[in-house]
Amino acid sequence: MFRPFSLLVTLVLCCLLTLTGCSPSQLKTQAAQVSQLVLLLPSNPNSFNYPLNQSPYSVFPFIYEGLLQEDGITAELKPALAESWEISKDKRRITFTLRDNLKWSDGQPLTADDVIFTFQQVYLNQKIPTVIRDFLRIGIKETFPSLKKLNAVQVEFTIPEPFAPFLRYTGVLPILPAHVLREYVETTDAKGNLKFLSIWGTDTNPTQIIGNGPYRMIDYIPSQRVVFQRNPYYWRQDIQGNSQPYIKRLVLQIIENTDNQLLRFRSGELDSLRVRNDAFALLKREERRGQYTIYNGGPSNGVQFVGFNLNQGRNSQDKPFVTPIKSRWFNNLAFRQAVAYAIDRERMNTNIYRGLGELQHSPIGMQSPYYLAPEAGLKVYNYNPQKAKQLLLEAGFQYNSQGQLLDEDGNLVKFTILVKSEDKSRVDTAVQIKENLSKIGMQADLQVLSFNVVIKKLLLSRDWDCYVGSFEGGEVEPHRLFFFWYSGGSFHQFNQGPQLGQVPIKGWKVSDWEREIDRLFEAGSKEIDVSKRKEIYAQFQQIVAEQLPLFFLVNPLSLQAVRDHVENVKFSALGGGLWNLYELKVSHN
Image (tube, rainbow, N blue to C red):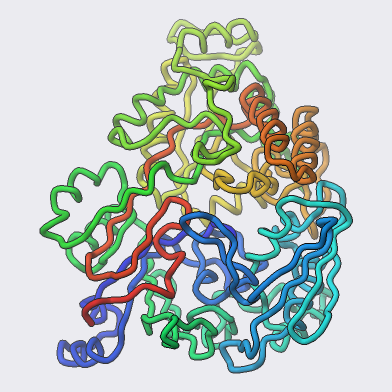
Protein backbone atom coordinates (compact mmCIF):
# COMPACT_ATOMS: atom_id res chain seq x y z
CA MET A 1 0.00 0.00 0.00
CA PHE A 2 1.28 3.52 -0.79
CA ARG A 3 2.43 5.36 2.33
CA PRO A 4 -0.54 7.54 3.17
CA PHE A 5 -1.08 4.65 5.74
CA SER A 6 1.82 5.16 8.14
CA LEU A 7 0.53 4.20 11.59
CA LEU A 8 2.14 4.78 14.96
CA VAL A 9 3.61 1.72 16.69
CA THR A 10 2.36 1.28 20.27
CA LEU A 11 2.47 -1.56 22.75
CA VAL A 12 0.87 -2.18 26.18
CA LEU A 13 -0.38 -5.10 28.25
CA CYS A 14 -2.13 -3.31 31.10
CA CYS A 15 -4.50 -1.64 28.63
CA LEU A 16 -6.22 -5.01 28.21
CA LEU A 17 -8.17 -4.09 31.29
CA THR A 18 -9.40 -0.89 29.67
CA LEU A 19 -10.14 -2.52 26.35
CA THR A 20 -11.81 -5.73 27.46
CA GLY A 21 -13.12 -4.99 30.92
CA CYS A 22 -11.18 -7.94 32.35
CA SER A 23 -10.44 -8.26 36.03
CA PRO A 24 -6.75 -8.18 37.08
CA SER A 25 -6.68 -11.96 37.40
CA GLN A 26 -8.17 -12.41 33.96
CA LEU A 27 -5.66 -9.90 32.64
CA LYS A 28 -2.72 -11.89 33.95
CA THR A 29 -4.09 -15.09 32.46
CA GLN A 30 -4.64 -13.54 29.05
CA ALA A 31 -1.27 -11.77 29.08
CA ALA A 32 0.45 -15.06 29.80
CA GLN A 33 -1.25 -16.74 26.86
CA VAL A 34 -1.46 -14.12 24.12
CA SER A 35 1.27 -11.81 22.83
CA GLN A 36 -0.22 -8.45 21.98
CA LEU A 37 0.60 -5.06 20.51
CA VAL A 38 -1.61 -2.04 20.98
CA LEU A 39 -1.19 0.46 18.16
CA LEU A 40 -2.34 4.05 18.00
CA LEU A 41 -4.83 5.21 15.35
CA PRO A 42 -5.43 9.01 15.40
CA SER A 43 -8.90 8.82 13.84
CA ASN A 44 -11.65 6.38 12.94
CA PRO A 45 -11.19 4.50 9.66
CA ASN A 46 -13.68 5.75 7.07
CA SER A 47 -14.07 2.48 5.14
CA PHE A 48 -13.19 -1.21 5.15
CA ASN A 49 -13.40 -1.19 1.34
CA TYR A 50 -9.84 -0.51 0.24
CA PRO A 51 -10.41 0.94 -3.27
CA LEU A 52 -12.96 3.43 -1.89
CA ASN A 53 -10.87 4.57 1.07
CA GLN A 54 -9.86 8.24 1.19
CA SER A 55 -8.22 8.44 4.60
CA PRO A 56 -4.69 7.66 5.80
CA TYR A 57 -6.18 6.26 9.00
CA SER A 58 -6.99 2.73 7.95
CA VAL A 59 -6.82 -0.96 8.74
CA PHE A 60 -5.49 -2.04 5.36
CA PRO A 61 -1.73 -2.38 6.09
CA PHE A 62 -2.63 -5.12 8.59
CA ILE A 63 -5.12 -7.15 6.56
CA TYR A 64 -3.83 -6.84 2.99
CA GLU A 65 -0.67 -7.45 1.07
CA GLY A 66 0.47 -6.91 -2.50
CA LEU A 67 2.55 -8.91 -4.91
CA LEU A 68 5.68 -7.12 -3.66
CA GLN A 69 6.83 -5.30 -0.54
CA GLU A 70 8.93 -2.15 -0.15
CA ASP A 71 11.86 -2.47 2.23
CA GLY A 72 11.33 0.23 4.84
CA ILE A 73 15.04 1.06 5.03
CA THR A 74 16.22 0.89 1.42
CA ALA A 75 12.88 1.09 -0.49
CA GLU A 76 14.05 -1.95 -2.45
CA LEU A 77 11.22 -4.06 -3.84
CA LYS A 78 11.09 -7.54 -2.32
CA PRO A 79 8.89 -10.61 -2.89
CA ALA A 80 5.58 -10.80 -1.03
CA LEU A 81 2.59 -12.70 -2.49
CA ALA A 82 4.71 -13.05 -5.62
CA GLU A 83 7.88 -15.03 -5.10
CA SER A 84 9.47 -13.61 -8.26
CA TRP A 85 8.92 -11.34 -11.25
CA GLU A 86 10.45 -10.92 -14.70
CA ILE A 87 10.59 -7.82 -16.91
CA SER A 88 10.82 -8.14 -20.69
CA LYS A 89 13.66 -6.52 -22.63
CA ASP A 90 11.35 -3.90 -24.12
CA LYS A 91 10.17 -2.93 -20.59
CA ARG A 92 6.54 -3.44 -21.61
CA ARG A 93 5.74 -6.79 -19.97
CA ILE A 94 6.06 -7.93 -16.36
CA THR A 95 5.34 -11.51 -15.36
CA PHE A 96 4.63 -12.20 -11.68
CA THR A 97 4.85 -15.71 -10.25
CA LEU A 98 2.82 -16.27 -7.08
CA ARG A 99 3.90 -18.43 -4.19
CA ASP A 100 2.43 -21.91 -4.01
CA ASN A 101 -0.52 -22.61 -1.73
CA LEU A 102 -1.41 -19.02 -0.87
CA LYS A 103 -4.67 -18.63 1.04
CA TRP A 104 -7.08 -15.93 2.08
CA SER A 105 -7.87 -15.31 5.74
CA ASP A 106 -10.96 -17.55 5.41
CA GLY A 107 -8.81 -20.43 4.16
CA GLN A 108 -9.82 -20.20 0.48
CA PRO A 109 -7.01 -20.43 -2.12
CA LEU A 110 -5.46 -17.24 -3.49
CA THR A 111 -4.51 -17.62 -7.17
CA ALA A 112 -3.83 -15.71 -10.35
CA ASP A 113 -7.59 -15.32 -10.73
CA ASP A 114 -7.59 -12.98 -7.72
CA VAL A 115 -4.87 -10.83 -9.29
CA ILE A 116 -6.77 -10.60 -12.57
CA PHE A 117 -9.99 -9.77 -10.72
CA THR A 118 -8.34 -7.11 -8.55
CA PHE A 119 -6.93 -5.14 -11.44
CA GLN A 120 -9.38 -5.76 -14.27
CA GLN A 121 -12.67 -5.71 -12.39
CA VAL A 122 -11.90 -3.37 -9.52
CA TYR A 123 -8.93 -1.01 -9.90
CA LEU A 124 -9.46 -0.47 -13.65
CA ASN A 125 -13.26 -0.55 -13.51
CA GLN A 126 -14.56 2.85 -14.68
CA LYS A 127 -17.71 2.37 -12.60
CA ILE A 128 -15.66 2.30 -9.39
CA PRO A 129 -14.40 5.76 -8.35
CA THR A 130 -10.97 4.98 -6.93
CA VAL A 131 -7.74 6.93 -6.78
CA ILE A 132 -5.92 3.70 -7.70
CA ARG A 133 -6.71 4.32 -11.36
CA ASP A 134 -4.45 7.38 -11.23
CA PHE A 135 -1.53 5.18 -10.25
CA LEU A 136 -2.20 2.68 -13.01
CA ARG A 137 -2.71 5.21 -15.80
CA ILE A 138 0.19 5.01 -18.24
CA GLY A 139 1.17 8.63 -18.66
CA ILE A 140 -1.66 11.15 -18.75
CA LYS A 141 -3.64 9.60 -21.59
CA GLU A 142 -6.45 7.19 -20.76
CA THR A 143 -4.31 4.12 -21.33
CA PHE A 144 -3.99 1.35 -18.79
CA PRO A 145 -2.23 -2.02 -18.50
CA SER A 146 -3.75 -5.23 -19.79
CA LEU A 147 -3.49 -8.52 -17.89
CA LYS A 148 -3.31 -12.13 -18.94
CA LYS A 149 -3.44 -15.26 -16.80
CA LEU A 150 -0.66 -17.62 -17.87
CA ASN A 151 -1.52 -20.33 -15.34
CA ALA A 152 -2.77 -20.66 -11.75
CA VAL A 153 0.26 -18.85 -10.32
CA GLN A 154 1.45 -16.58 -13.14
CA VAL A 155 0.05 -13.28 -14.41
CA GLU A 156 1.46 -11.13 -17.19
CA PHE A 157 0.97 -7.35 -17.24
CA THR A 158 1.43 -5.54 -20.55
CA ILE A 159 1.71 -1.77 -20.94
CA PRO A 160 1.59 0.23 -24.19
CA GLU A 161 4.92 1.96 -23.57
CA PRO A 162 7.71 1.92 -20.98
CA PHE A 163 6.48 3.39 -17.69
CA ALA A 164 9.16 3.87 -15.05
CA PRO A 165 6.96 3.63 -11.90
CA PHE A 166 4.86 0.71 -13.10
CA LEU A 167 6.56 -2.15 -11.24
CA ARG A 168 6.48 -0.31 -7.91
CA TYR A 169 2.85 0.75 -8.33
CA THR A 170 1.60 -2.61 -9.47
CA GLY A 171 3.62 -4.58 -6.98
CA VAL A 172 2.56 -2.90 -3.76
CA LEU A 173 -1.20 -2.57 -4.41
CA PRO A 174 -3.25 -4.98 -2.28
CA ILE A 175 -4.77 -8.03 -3.95
CA LEU A 176 -8.51 -8.42 -3.26
CA PRO A 177 -10.57 -11.62 -2.79
CA ALA A 178 -12.47 -12.49 -6.00
CA HIS A 179 -14.45 -15.29 -4.33
CA VAL A 180 -16.08 -12.75 -1.98
CA LEU A 181 -16.26 -9.54 -4.00
CA ARG A 182 -16.93 -10.67 -7.56
CA GLU A 183 -20.72 -10.85 -7.16
CA TYR A 184 -20.82 -7.25 -5.89
CA VAL A 185 -18.78 -6.00 -8.85
CA GLU A 186 -21.02 -7.80 -11.34
CA THR A 187 -24.43 -6.79 -9.87
CA THR A 188 -26.19 -3.46 -9.35
CA ASP A 189 -28.72 -2.09 -6.89
CA ALA A 190 -32.15 -0.63 -7.68
CA LYS A 191 -30.52 2.66 -8.76
CA GLY A 192 -28.17 0.94 -11.18
CA ASN A 193 -25.06 1.44 -9.05
CA LEU A 194 -22.62 -1.39 -8.48
CA LYS A 195 -23.29 -3.09 -5.16
CA PHE A 196 -19.54 -2.97 -4.62
CA LEU A 197 -19.84 0.76 -3.88
CA SER A 198 -21.96 0.14 -0.78
CA ILE A 199 -20.34 -2.94 0.75
CA TRP A 200 -17.67 -3.24 3.43
CA GLY A 201 -18.36 0.08 5.09
CA THR A 202 -17.27 0.55 8.67
CA ASP A 203 -20.70 -0.71 9.79
CA THR A 204 -19.82 -4.16 8.42
CA ASN A 205 -19.07 -6.94 10.90
CA PRO A 206 -15.24 -6.91 10.90
CA THR A 207 -15.08 -10.71 10.79
CA GLN A 208 -16.65 -10.56 7.32
CA ILE A 209 -13.70 -8.61 5.87
CA ILE A 210 -11.48 -11.12 4.09
CA GLY A 211 -7.81 -10.31 3.55
CA ASN A 212 -4.43 -11.86 2.83
CA GLY A 213 -2.19 -9.93 5.20
CA PRO A 214 -0.61 -10.85 8.53
CA TYR A 215 -3.77 -10.15 10.54
CA ARG A 216 -7.56 -10.30 10.26
CA MET A 217 -10.08 -8.05 11.98
CA ILE A 218 -12.28 -9.41 14.73
CA ASP A 219 -13.80 -6.30 16.34
CA TYR A 220 -14.38 -2.58 15.77
CA ILE A 221 -15.94 -0.06 18.15
CA PRO A 222 -15.97 3.46 16.65
CA SER A 223 -13.90 6.04 18.54
CA GLN A 224 -12.51 3.28 20.77
CA ARG A 225 -10.61 0.49 19.07
CA VAL A 226 -10.06 -1.96 16.23
CA VAL A 227 -8.93 -5.47 17.21
CA PHE A 228 -7.03 -7.96 15.05
CA GLN A 229 -5.80 -11.50 15.50
CA ARG A 230 -3.02 -13.23 13.62
CA ASN A 231 -4.10 -14.63 10.25
CA PRO A 232 -3.55 -18.41 10.55
CA TYR A 233 -3.30 -18.71 6.76
CA TYR A 234 -0.63 -16.03 6.26
CA TRP A 235 2.22 -17.33 4.11
CA ARG A 236 5.28 -15.88 5.84
CA GLN A 237 7.67 -17.99 7.95
CA ASP A 238 11.11 -17.30 9.39
CA ILE A 239 14.20 -19.31 8.42
CA GLN A 240 13.49 -21.79 11.22
CA GLY A 241 10.03 -22.44 9.81
CA ASN A 242 8.15 -20.56 12.54
CA SER A 243 4.95 -18.81 11.46
CA GLN A 244 5.01 -15.04 11.25
CA PRO A 245 3.97 -12.57 12.50
CA TYR A 246 5.09 -13.56 15.97
CA ILE A 247 2.62 -11.30 17.77
CA LYS A 248 -0.80 -12.93 17.92
CA ARG A 249 -3.06 -9.97 18.62
CA LEU A 250 -3.17 -6.29 17.65
CA VAL A 251 -5.32 -3.49 19.01
CA LEU A 252 -5.59 -0.06 17.41
CA GLN A 253 -6.61 2.42 20.08
CA ILE A 254 -8.41 5.36 18.51
CA ILE A 255 -7.19 8.52 20.25
CA GLU A 256 -7.71 11.70 18.27
CA ASN A 257 -6.26 14.33 20.59
CA THR A 258 -2.45 14.50 20.54
CA ASP A 259 -2.29 15.71 24.15
CA ASN A 260 -4.28 12.64 25.22
CA GLN A 261 -1.95 10.44 23.19
CA LEU A 262 1.01 11.84 25.11
CA LEU A 263 -0.72 11.35 28.46
CA ARG A 264 -1.58 7.74 27.64
CA PHE A 265 2.01 7.06 26.65
CA ARG A 266 3.53 8.65 29.75
CA SER A 267 1.08 6.82 32.01
CA GLY A 268 2.23 3.49 30.57
CA GLU A 269 -0.90 2.65 28.60
CA LEU A 270 0.89 3.09 25.30
CA ASP A 271 4.34 1.77 24.67
CA SER A 272 5.02 3.67 21.48
CA LEU A 273 4.28 7.14 20.22
CA ARG A 274 5.19 9.43 17.36
CA VAL A 275 7.17 12.11 19.20
CA ARG A 276 5.92 15.60 18.48
CA ASN A 277 8.60 18.22 18.57
CA ASP A 278 6.93 20.09 21.43
CA ALA A 279 7.07 16.91 23.52
CA PHE A 280 10.61 15.86 22.61
CA ALA A 281 12.46 17.51 25.52
CA LEU A 282 10.04 16.07 28.09
CA LEU A 283 10.13 12.56 26.64
CA LYS A 284 13.90 12.65 26.19
CA ARG A 285 14.35 13.42 29.91
CA GLU A 286 12.16 10.46 30.81
CA GLU A 287 13.67 8.05 28.27
CA ARG A 288 15.67 5.92 30.70
CA ARG A 289 13.08 5.87 33.48
CA GLY A 290 10.31 5.09 31.02
CA GLN A 291 12.37 2.27 29.48
CA TYR A 292 11.88 3.36 25.92
CA THR A 293 14.07 4.55 23.06
CA ILE A 294 13.39 7.57 20.86
CA TYR A 295 14.30 6.65 17.29
CA ASN A 296 15.34 9.44 14.91
CA GLY A 297 14.65 8.64 11.25
CA GLY A 298 15.88 12.01 9.96
CA PRO A 299 13.63 14.46 8.08
CA SER A 300 10.17 12.99 7.68
CA ASN A 301 9.06 11.93 4.23
CA GLY A 302 6.00 14.16 4.33
CA VAL A 303 5.78 17.68 2.92
CA GLN A 304 3.86 20.31 4.89
CA PHE A 305 2.27 23.24 3.08
CA VAL A 306 -0.31 26.00 3.01
CA GLY A 307 -2.35 26.55 -0.12
CA PHE A 308 -5.40 28.34 -1.47
CA ASN A 309 -8.45 27.02 -3.29
CA LEU A 310 -7.86 28.05 -6.92
CA ASN A 311 -11.02 26.35 -8.20
CA GLN A 312 -13.13 28.79 -10.23
CA GLY A 313 -15.93 26.30 -10.85
CA ARG A 314 -19.48 26.08 -9.52
CA ASN A 315 -21.38 23.22 -7.93
CA SER A 316 -24.53 21.51 -9.19
CA GLN A 317 -26.65 24.31 -7.65
CA ASP A 318 -24.63 26.81 -9.73
CA LYS A 319 -23.00 28.19 -6.57
CA PRO A 320 -19.27 29.03 -6.78
CA PHE A 321 -17.02 26.81 -4.68
CA VAL A 322 -15.15 29.98 -3.72
CA THR A 323 -16.85 33.36 -3.62
CA PRO A 324 -15.78 35.37 -6.71
CA ILE A 325 -14.14 38.11 -4.65
CA LYS A 326 -11.92 35.63 -2.79
CA SER A 327 -11.29 33.65 -5.96
CA ARG A 328 -9.82 36.75 -7.61
CA TRP A 329 -7.42 37.14 -4.69
CA PHE A 330 -6.37 33.51 -4.59
CA ASN A 331 -5.80 33.32 -8.35
CA ASN A 332 -3.61 36.43 -8.27
CA LEU A 333 0.02 35.29 -8.32
CA ALA A 334 1.23 38.40 -6.48
CA PHE A 335 -1.23 37.62 -3.67
CA ARG A 336 0.15 34.09 -3.29
CA GLN A 337 3.74 35.33 -3.44
CA ALA A 338 2.99 37.91 -0.75
CA VAL A 339 1.64 35.18 1.53
CA ALA A 340 4.81 33.15 0.94
CA TYR A 341 7.04 36.07 1.95
CA ALA A 342 4.82 36.82 4.97
CA ILE A 343 5.21 33.44 6.69
CA ASP A 344 8.10 33.24 9.16
CA ARG A 345 9.19 29.63 8.81
CA GLU A 346 12.31 30.04 10.94
CA ARG A 347 10.10 31.09 13.82
CA MET A 348 7.80 28.18 13.03
CA ASN A 349 10.69 25.74 13.24
CA THR A 350 11.96 27.26 16.48
CA ASN A 351 8.66 27.65 18.33
CA ILE A 352 6.50 24.82 17.03
CA TYR A 353 9.10 22.22 16.09
CA ARG A 354 11.62 23.19 18.80
CA GLY A 355 14.33 23.42 16.16
CA LEU A 356 13.81 19.75 15.27
CA GLY A 357 13.04 20.34 11.62
CA GLU A 358 14.29 21.79 8.37
CA LEU A 359 12.73 24.38 6.07
CA GLN A 360 11.05 22.74 3.11
CA HIS A 361 11.13 24.47 -0.27
CA SER A 362 9.90 21.84 -2.70
CA PRO A 363 6.96 19.49 -3.32
CA ILE A 364 9.48 16.65 -3.41
CA GLY A 365 10.91 15.48 -0.09
CA MET A 366 14.46 16.62 0.62
CA GLN A 367 15.61 13.02 1.14
CA SER A 368 14.64 12.12 -2.43
CA PRO A 369 17.32 11.81 -5.11
CA TYR A 370 14.99 13.94 -7.26
CA TYR A 371 14.88 16.85 -4.80
CA LEU A 372 15.99 20.19 -6.25
CA ALA A 373 17.74 22.16 -3.52
CA PRO A 374 17.90 25.96 -3.35
CA GLU A 375 21.65 25.63 -3.85
CA ALA A 376 20.88 24.03 -7.21
CA GLY A 377 18.68 26.94 -8.27
CA LEU A 378 15.25 26.39 -6.73
CA LYS A 379 13.43 29.68 -6.09
CA VAL A 380 12.83 30.31 -2.38
CA TYR A 381 10.78 32.78 -0.32
CA ASN A 382 12.61 33.92 2.79
CA TYR A 383 10.64 35.84 5.40
CA ASN A 384 10.19 39.40 4.19
CA PRO A 385 6.90 41.07 5.20
CA GLN A 386 7.92 44.38 3.63
CA LYS A 387 8.36 42.72 0.26
CA ALA A 388 4.97 41.05 0.77
CA LYS A 389 3.31 44.44 1.27
CA GLN A 390 5.11 45.87 -1.76
CA LEU A 391 3.86 43.03 -3.97
CA LEU A 392 0.29 43.59 -2.78
CA LEU A 393 0.41 47.34 -3.42
CA GLU A 394 1.84 46.82 -6.88
CA ALA A 395 -0.99 44.37 -7.60
CA GLY A 396 -3.66 46.98 -6.78
CA PHE A 397 -4.35 46.15 -3.14
CA GLN A 398 -4.43 48.98 -0.60
CA TYR A 399 -4.38 49.60 3.15
CA ASN A 400 -6.92 51.54 5.18
CA SER A 401 -6.14 53.74 8.16
CA GLN A 402 -6.25 50.72 10.51
CA GLY A 403 -3.65 48.87 8.45
CA GLN A 404 -6.19 46.39 7.09
CA LEU A 405 -5.67 45.10 3.57
CA LEU A 406 -8.33 45.93 0.99
CA ASP A 407 -8.57 44.89 -2.64
CA GLU A 408 -8.90 47.42 -5.46
CA ASP A 409 -12.67 47.47 -4.99
CA GLY A 410 -12.41 48.23 -1.28
CA ASN A 411 -13.26 44.70 -0.06
CA LEU A 412 -11.63 43.68 3.22
CA VAL A 413 -9.21 40.77 2.61
CA LYS A 414 -10.62 38.13 4.92
CA PHE A 415 -10.72 34.34 4.55
CA THR A 416 -10.74 31.07 6.51
CA ILE A 417 -7.81 28.71 7.15
CA LEU A 418 -8.86 25.04 7.28
CA VAL A 419 -6.80 22.61 9.37
CA LYS A 420 -7.32 19.12 10.76
CA SER A 421 -7.88 18.80 14.50
CA GLU A 422 -5.93 15.59 15.12
CA ASP A 423 -2.45 17.13 14.84
CA LYS A 424 -1.60 19.82 17.41
CA SER A 425 1.52 20.97 15.55
CA ARG A 426 -0.60 21.45 12.41
CA VAL A 427 -3.10 23.57 14.36
CA ASP A 428 -0.24 25.56 15.93
CA THR A 429 1.14 26.12 12.43
CA ALA A 430 -2.20 27.48 11.28
CA VAL A 431 -2.32 29.80 14.31
CA GLN A 432 1.11 31.21 13.47
CA ILE A 433 0.18 31.67 9.79
CA LYS A 434 -2.89 33.62 10.94
CA GLU A 435 -0.63 35.84 13.07
CA ASN A 436 1.93 36.31 10.28
CA LEU A 437 -0.75 37.31 7.77
CA SER A 438 -2.24 39.83 10.18
CA LYS A 439 1.06 41.72 10.00
CA ILE A 440 0.46 42.37 6.29
CA GLY A 441 -3.16 43.32 6.89
CA MET A 442 -4.88 40.06 6.04
CA GLN A 443 -7.58 38.73 8.38
CA ALA A 444 -7.79 34.94 8.66
CA ASP A 445 -10.16 32.85 10.77
CA LEU A 446 -9.39 29.25 11.73
CA GLN A 447 -11.65 26.30 10.92
CA VAL A 448 -10.42 23.25 12.88
CA LEU A 449 -12.19 20.04 11.85
CA SER A 450 -11.62 16.29 12.02
CA PHE A 451 -9.57 14.99 9.13
CA ASN A 452 -12.38 12.91 7.64
CA VAL A 453 -14.50 16.08 7.41
CA VAL A 454 -11.54 18.00 5.98
CA ILE A 455 -11.10 15.42 3.21
CA LYS A 456 -14.77 15.76 2.23
CA LYS A 457 -14.45 19.54 2.01
CA LEU A 458 -11.26 19.34 -0.04
CA LEU A 459 -12.33 16.68 -2.52
CA LEU A 460 -16.13 16.57 -2.56
CA SER A 461 -17.86 19.80 -1.56
CA ARG A 462 -14.73 21.86 -2.43
CA ASP A 463 -15.98 24.66 -0.16
CA TRP A 464 -12.82 25.94 1.48
CA ASP A 465 -10.51 28.97 1.22
CA CYS A 466 -7.07 28.14 2.55
CA TYR A 467 -5.70 24.84 3.87
CA VAL A 468 -2.73 23.86 6.02
CA GLY A 469 -1.94 20.28 5.09
CA SER A 470 0.67 17.74 4.06
CA PHE A 471 1.28 14.97 1.54
CA GLU A 472 3.86 12.31 0.86
CA GLY A 473 7.05 13.74 -0.62
CA GLY A 474 7.76 11.08 -3.24
CA GLU A 475 10.97 10.12 -1.46
CA VAL A 476 11.64 7.20 -3.80
CA GLU A 477 9.39 7.58 -6.83
CA PRO A 478 8.38 11.17 -7.70
CA HIS A 479 5.48 9.93 -9.81
CA ARG A 480 3.76 9.07 -6.54
CA LEU A 481 2.86 12.75 -6.51
CA PHE A 482 1.02 12.39 -9.80
CA PHE A 483 -2.42 11.93 -8.24
CA PHE A 484 -1.94 15.26 -6.43
CA TRP A 485 -0.36 17.36 -9.20
CA TYR A 486 -2.08 16.03 -12.33
CA SER A 487 -4.86 18.49 -13.21
CA GLY A 488 -7.39 15.68 -13.45
CA GLY A 489 -6.02 13.78 -10.46
CA SER A 490 -8.16 12.43 -7.65
CA PHE A 491 -6.29 14.52 -5.04
CA HIS A 492 -5.60 17.69 -7.06
CA GLN A 493 -7.11 19.52 -4.16
CA PHE A 494 -6.11 23.13 -4.89
CA ASN A 495 -8.08 22.94 -8.17
CA GLN A 496 -10.06 19.73 -7.85
CA GLY A 497 -11.85 18.89 -11.09
CA PRO A 498 -14.74 16.49 -11.71
CA GLN A 499 -13.99 12.88 -10.87
CA LEU A 500 -15.36 9.61 -12.15
CA GLY A 501 -19.02 9.32 -11.24
CA GLN A 502 -19.41 13.00 -10.33
CA VAL A 503 -21.46 15.55 -12.24
CA PRO A 504 -19.50 17.94 -14.51
CA ILE A 505 -18.24 21.14 -12.89
CA LYS A 506 -19.39 24.36 -14.51
CA GLY A 507 -16.64 26.88 -15.12
CA TRP A 508 -13.74 24.70 -14.01
CA LYS A 509 -10.49 26.04 -15.51
CA VAL A 510 -7.04 24.51 -15.85
CA SER A 511 -4.14 26.97 -16.05
CA ASP A 512 -1.30 26.76 -18.56
CA TRP A 513 1.21 25.99 -15.83
CA GLU A 514 -0.95 23.11 -14.58
CA ARG A 515 -0.98 21.69 -18.10
CA GLU A 516 2.80 22.03 -18.25
CA ILE A 517 3.08 20.07 -15.00
CA ASP A 518 0.84 17.42 -16.61
CA ARG A 519 3.27 17.27 -19.54
CA LEU A 520 6.32 16.97 -17.30
CA PHE A 521 4.82 14.13 -15.28
CA GLU A 522 3.98 12.29 -18.47
CA ALA A 523 7.55 12.77 -19.73
CA GLY A 524 9.02 11.72 -16.38
CA SER A 525 6.98 8.54 -16.27
CA LYS A 526 8.19 7.47 -19.72
CA GLU A 527 11.86 8.25 -19.11
CA ILE A 528 13.87 5.33 -17.76
CA ASP A 529 17.21 7.18 -17.48
CA VAL A 530 17.51 8.52 -13.92
CA SER A 531 19.60 11.58 -14.79
CA LYS A 532 17.10 12.67 -17.44
CA ARG A 533 14.23 12.07 -15.03
CA LYS A 534 15.96 14.35 -12.50
CA GLU A 535 16.03 17.14 -15.08
CA ILE A 536 12.33 16.71 -15.80
CA TYR A 537 11.29 16.77 -12.15
CA ALA A 538 13.58 19.74 -11.52
CA GLN A 539 11.51 21.70 -14.05
CA PHE A 540 8.36 20.63 -12.22
CA GLN A 541 9.73 21.90 -8.91
CA GLN A 542 10.68 25.23 -10.47
CA ILE A 543 7.16 25.73 -11.84
CA VAL A 544 5.66 25.07 -8.42
CA ALA A 545 8.12 27.51 -6.85
CA GLU A 546 7.22 30.18 -9.41
CA GLN A 547 3.43 29.71 -9.41
CA LEU A 548 2.95 28.84 -5.72
CA PRO A 549 -0.25 26.82 -5.75
CA LEU A 550 1.21 25.67 -2.43
CA PHE A 551 3.83 27.21 -0.20
CA PHE A 552 5.98 24.75 1.73
CA LEU A 553 6.71 25.10 5.42
CA VAL A 554 8.85 22.98 7.78
CA ASN A 555 9.77 19.33 7.46
CA PRO A 556 10.00 17.93 11.02
CA LEU A 557 12.30 15.13 12.04
CA SER A 558 10.71 11.69 12.13
CA LEU A 559 10.86 10.70 15.81
CA GLN A 560 9.30 7.62 17.40
CA ALA A 561 9.39 6.45 21.01
CA VAL A 562 9.17 2.66 21.46
CA ARG A 563 9.39 0.73 24.72
CA ASP A 564 12.54 -1.31 24.97
CA HIS A 565 10.70 -4.62 25.26
CA VAL A 566 9.52 -4.37 21.66
CA GLU A 567 12.15 -6.31 19.74
CA ASN A 568 13.38 -6.10 16.14
CA VAL A 569 12.31 -2.49 15.61
CA LYS A 570 13.82 -1.10 12.38
CA PHE A 571 12.43 2.42 12.41
CA SER A 572 12.98 4.81 9.52
CA ALA A 573 11.33 7.92 8.11
CA LEU A 574 10.74 5.94 4.95
CA GLY A 575 9.03 2.88 6.39
CA GLY A 576 7.97 4.04 9.84
CA GLY A 577 7.89 1.53 12.68
CA LEU A 578 5.58 -1.10 11.23
CA TRP A 579 7.01 -1.96 7.83
CA ASN A 580 8.54 -5.14 9.33
CA LEU A 581 5.60 -5.88 11.65
CA TYR A 582 5.90 -9.60 10.95
CA GLU A 583 9.35 -9.57 12.62
CA LEU A 584 8.38 -7.68 15.79
CA LYS A 585 8.35 -9.50 19.10
CA VAL A 586 7.31 -8.63 22.63
CA SER A 587 9.95 -9.79 25.11
CA HIS A 588 7.53 -10.07 28.06
CA ASN A 589 3.89 -11.09 27.83
